[in-house]
Length: 219
Image 1: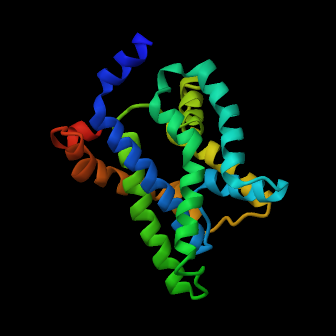
Image 2 (image 1 turned 90 degrees about the vertical axis):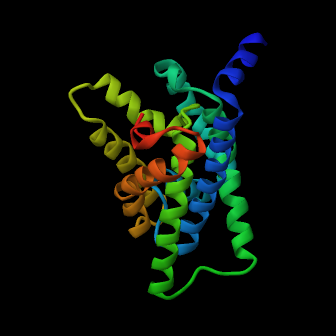
């Protein structure tokens, strides 16, 4: 048990708190994208589509598939495992479902294109802030996110960008084949979140973590 105490002492409560809030916001962002009916991020979209296809709840199916990905992460990228890995793996699906249920109390998926695009824009902001706060504390990578990093490690001649595109592309394809929505929201999540995440890294999360300057946000 001493190693657990040492681990939490080393990372500190501030990084854990920022990471937890980041996961809560990411779950909210996933729910907002779902409410827009214009597509979700490739992983969440795949989880929602496949779980509906096989008749299993989305949060439970996400945990089951995450355990498969976690086995790969445990074998090939143990250095990427931390408390953030476990919390994201077990609770992100439930957080997204919770937020979607809360949103359903006062709104329904809009029919108009303008309203749907506004939801996508809000989803981009919320999801980017959540991902920034989840990733920058560096307390563990989600099993799905580790797949592209593992590919990048095993295939050094292929840049990480293309490894991530491949992993997200396979998830988007699985989403489509399972009858899910692959749309504007999916494309935005796959290609457009990076600059927004970097913005929040520099101007929000690094200050919450008491890191100094934009350079620290790039570590």
